[in-house]
Image (cartoon, rainbow, N blue to C red; front, side, top):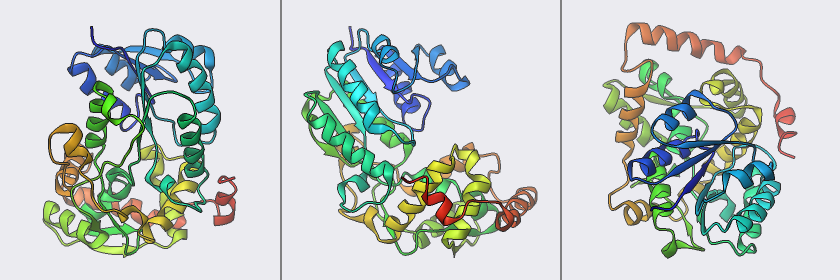
Length: 332
């Protein structure tokens, strides 16, 4: 029998894809989710079992961990991670969990971070390292979806890649590669216990280089438009709901954008983690862009798509959004 695996945040960007890969490999997978959503039901139909609960609910976690040997622990973008980790450590040790893959963050490797979420991840590292649990730490930088996915429609339909990232560069990883790394680690965690692994894409790219790739895929000119913070805040509140971004997420993104401009996401350059764990090269940026376009509602450039995108774009400056000071209060 293969080991029972628990996937937390199982309907998120990486959890659902990792669950699919593990189910395809014949592993018994249990999903720890807040509600029986359509995505959770789809995974259930593929063979996963569901356990409902919150991260701070020790009893729900205790039930979810019965018979589980390995866990992917991915906390949502929200406050409260250290308290949730304390609950998890207690229950996981009781349950005899043998290995944990913990979703961390590259910026947690740097001192003097202003993001409360980044500092919560730093605190979680300390708690887990002292817990006695066998943990592998994933430290990805900005995902490709967060880098380009939210503005891709404007780039493809209007030829405008709006960016708050300045001159920063980033070897962006795809959600699919991150999920493949997670699935590989859950299948064979032993060689990586205690390590901090940073999966990346194959090449560091600037925003103009990303725009050139989008232009090649879309078959049109694409120019970069720098987004000042006030415009980013309005755009985030105008379109962020499409990607599940709430006010707290946006408050953290404002801080991460500054780190991007300071080139923190390019420190160390691309890594070989994806190749080492999966046996193949990480997806390049063009592959990622083509997948997003194939799955999008707007597809390639068209008159109708351009009109829809233009309508959304013109509304952004008039979008109500919290001030910088009001948003900063969420980062406390």
